[in-house]
Amino acid sequence: MTNKPLTTIGLIMPNDFPVSAYEKIHSRITAKQKTHPDSWSLYAGAWNAVAYRFYACVDHDKAFTESVQRGGSSPPQPERYIQEKELFCFFVTGLAVIESFCYGLFAIGSILDKKNFKIGISKELRSISPEKTTRQFLKAFPQDDIARELNQMINAQEFIDWKEIRNILTHRSAPGRLISLGREETLWIKGIQIDINTTTSKLKWLEKTMSDLLKAADTLTNRYL
Image (cartoon, rainbow, N blue to C red; front, top):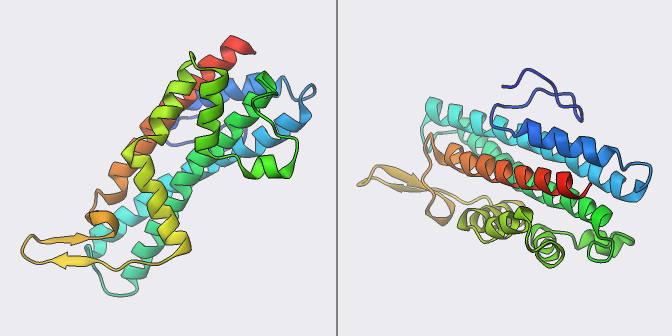
């Protein structure tokens, strides 16, 4: 872990969180607080959420992995409940990291280009999503790294799967597990194998994705602000 708390939420973040880019962006946007109060308000809440949700996602990965180490891939209760809870929270908070980042980035876009990043009414705010943020950056800043990184992210199979799993868990069901005795494996949603790497492998993708996105956003804000 880094040894200095974030200026936004006062927590020392896990090692793989891109603290430097996150903090440099925050410093530049904070300088616009008085001249762009509406954009600042949207950005500030989202930037807090990026850090909180990332921290939580790491915690849920650790707790799920430890549960599998204790009880295996299909344990009796109450260990099974622990695994179900941690899987739910892992996928919810993980996607929230990306969604909060894209919301905050849209607010940054409203400082740079009000025409393409409208935040004036609640309907406009409710429509902000990773996909919409990507479209607007491809339109307004097509040559910048952030547009490419966003487009790569929303088209990644990992993102598509993560979003689908989150939606299943939050809106539809708590799926069971398929135990294959011959292959000695336990399968879950979309054929995901339940083992000590289930959440950790996906967390690595999230860490890499957020590092790339924040570095690109750092370059963007350094260039235009």
